Length: 419
Image (cartoon, rainbow, N blue to C red; front, side, top):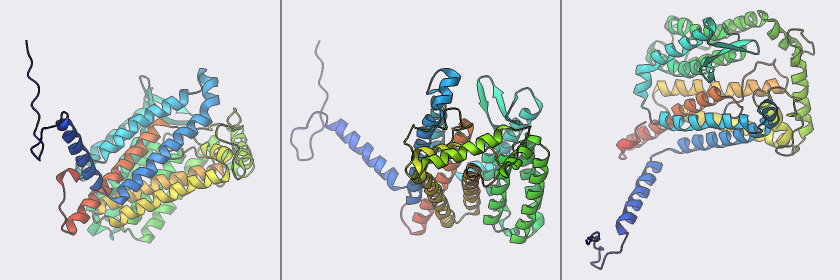
């Protein structure tokens, strides 16, 4: 039996075709298509994506270094916490890219349901055996082998909800009643279910990005000052309602508390870690504090390990990364003509940058220990996923801004580049 060889496409000059020319032309077409897709994105898109990916990779390296000793003590495996964080990152990365392609209309249609579902999960944490208490905070849910924080889902849903609602209220934003009516019951209720879990750090971050979203929406400063005063009063009441939180405040001023005796130890060893790093650090992987001297070395106090191993230079690099992140967010806000992406991006910016400020300020001893991770760097699975999805939302806005700019200039807009 004979087989007929595949027919070869003749060359453009009429000469004999070369074998494999079809596959080469297909590969060339794929490269051209990929190039067009890349060219359709804006500089802000690539800058935000590049900073995010660098911070995620840097965070994985620091999680591996800071958690290796405790991982070995807990599981007899130096890499257990690193593999766990890596697995969550591998979930967050594709979600970030998928979300970056979702149109804004999807969020406007579904955000009420998403926010309600997230609050329902937090309610289950409070009133059912699914809730898990860690460090005095009942803020985790255990379903089978999965343990996560519904409060991270609430943060993610709330920033988008703020953008949707405040965009609809744009023409009525000067009337405080039209601002207070949706914000107080809905945003206040979402924050309230987190407060009931005892997580003061997350509560402060959520209150901050709500105020930030209101500011960028154009709410009058005097209304924001009233809101800030209300947040401060609630924060004081929540802090005084817990002996553990009062102990953290006492530790900030050199005191101690029987309810939380390890706080002084944690703060002091955070200082020792930063001081021993000097300018250039002791070298990656050479931290002494991670040998069970510094609690939460891979989560809340990872910045101390960065300062110890990479020195002042490494700490400054981390600060500059967050400054660059804030600059890109501001560029995207400035280029947005629609109030929905502008307010949502602003709320996400305040969320990530303010949370980074709180984390670093705790390590430096400027504010009491609040227990919030360093975004995109600290260990923490649901925190990493929610932060990457939030970045994906902003990436979709950056794509839409570029598309709107090309349309305004009269340039052709490819249908595949829609946000």
